[in-house]
Image 1 (cartoon, protein in one colour):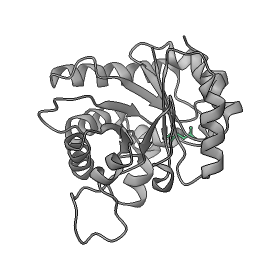
Image 2 (tube, rainbow, N blue to C red):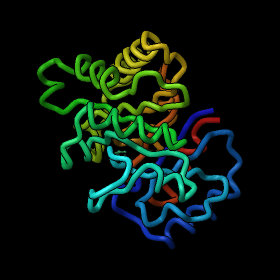
Image 3 (cartoon, rainbow, N blue to C red):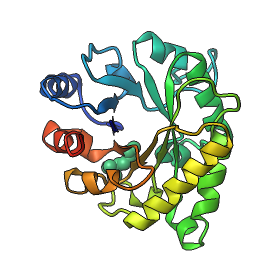
Image 4 (cartoon, rainbow, N blue to C red):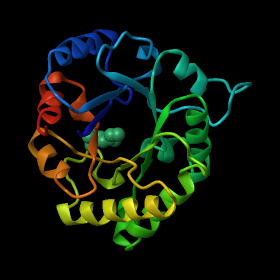
Length: 234
Ligand code: 13P
């Protein structure tokens, strides 16, 4: 069983979501399908697909105009939320500490946080990938986690770029994440790979050791692109 998560970012509509739910409803798959959609679509009846948010506030409630709390997301019936996506780190200034606070509130409200980590091209070129990923995991995962979390490795330079790291590079990073989680008492936590995943590379990527699924951006928007990824692995 693999986890196939889609991240619609600021794309799609209610019509698109209802169509996707319909298209996926007859799929025969053991894989877990999660769609992280804009907040306005979170209360949709989603059948066998689990819905998730793309971010939650680091605060519980209060005077934080424009923010949406983990409890509000949970009240919609959503089960997951991304936290620390590279676009939130880049455009909203999220740090490992804020991501950790968001993940803790997600957990406290019964959501499974999908905690994203990844290096920029500058960090990769400076040979800092492993350091950034290890500190990203250690500092973004709350202490004392008692329920499920998911980690997503998203190399920031490969997102939406149509390029991916080599299989060996993905294996090296995922093995590091697995070892780091194990040392934190979180062995067995699923680790997803995200960035430029499509039907043509999904099977190869999900065959790499310690890759328990994928987090898909652009190719999760249309069933014609998303279904081949979901059914690429049994
Ligand atoms: P792409 O699949 O479009 O590269 O996006 C990846 C991503 O950011 C998923 O969260």
